[in-house]
Length: 259
Length: 356
Image (cartoon, rainbow over all chains, first blue to last red; front, side, top):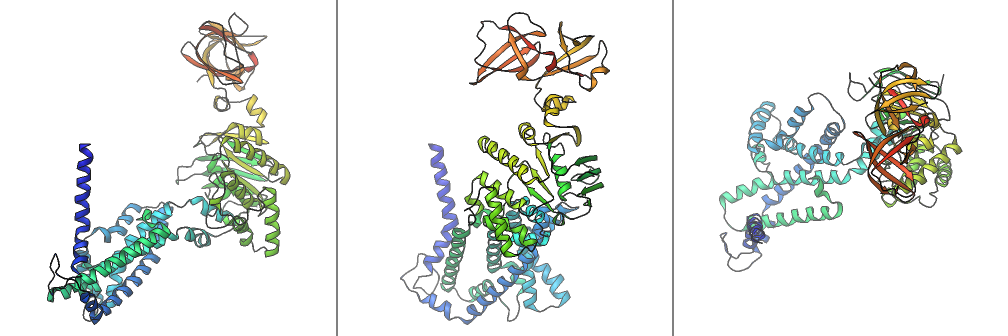
């Protein structure tokens, strides 16, 4: 009995730590104050109105969306064959290669961002936008490989062999039989990767430049100059969006088992 | 040349360490051959080599006069049935069965006709639109069968197709397979570890152990005349005793077991190789034992540990010296109030193998 009371206490503390900040942000976004303060005084929706009217937020939102979509799709297209090879075949140096593939998820984002800037962007002198897109692709790649691998592992190899024995080439069998059955894994990979890209700060910090900024970077810049609840309002919008996307795909496809 | 010929095959999962070494196998057209053995004996490797999922490192695979050795699996006209059915989960029964026909560019009307026929054959008419998840295990295996025979393969390979089914369904499907085989006359290679399946279905059984063939024969040969201790044990000669050859007589070979002389008059390969004083092992089936109180021919003293009533039979756990013996006898448990009795085995049910 005593044990379970302690357990409840720990659980409550955990939830307060996890969800508390979100609550603070959401509540403070409805404040009437011109300075972010908790608990807020009064109630208004003016910060939401302001968010929607700041041009920089709108343009960087589209930038984040486009970068996220492009990088996620590229990482998926590259990640699926790699995941397939890792799950289905045994080859020399597989463990090392797997480590290399997952390194962008292990190495701190700041390190990746700086190295990409110093040893890739400066050296090749590619446009900022291209650099941002490639950098995001690199950090998303381990996520797509891992999630797609998990769904491939759940898929019986015998089914593929059945298709081959019935006359499909291995490539045809992959498209006709494997892909349709790992759809929910692909969706899970897509969402996880997209959200990772959309929320990324450390890598984007190094790879954005004049005229090219993502939403999180723009928010950071904004906060350096203003300390009003606009950022709370914007954050609340993003939180609600993320929760809706995750919840609805989970309900439809049960994607959490791949993450 | 036989319909299927595997010669000098080396094949396995890791290069340089083949499961099958210098392996030979020939199967005639229309035969149903079982590969019988414990897991890891190479039976599935053999099947996968014929199917083309394992390419032989050495040797030759010929099916119907065509060299299959280097042919990729999708170019071999072979039907495959898996233990876990391997149906396409996202396709209906109809689409599952149509898959191979579509790959073969069969005309749409003809596909419909063929599928109607084959679904009738496996008693699944009316299930066309169901998804595999909406079918029972037995129905799924029927779909898998239909899917593999509708392409009219040269050869049907079945990898433990019944082992995921419960006992009653297994009996039904076994009968069904047997019927299909007779009806279609299709050549089948059937991998199993279940001796009853192998005995009841096959025209020939190949017993395998550690990548080698132990014995090839008709079900009766295998059951009655196992040639090696491995086959004997695998096919139900569960009991064994140690003894020493003490002579040969008109009745057969005389073997001394703990001071009692037993006679064996069935002679597997090593019968003539043994001489007086050789240590030997005796094998016999639980069903071939009789229990008696008084002394009788060819009997040895044993003690009953316990009897387990099972309705039409009773199972006994006994021991002779340090050797555990299992006996299965018809009827109720032996009621005589004695711990010590004698087990009797008729001389023609007792296998003697030379001990190395």
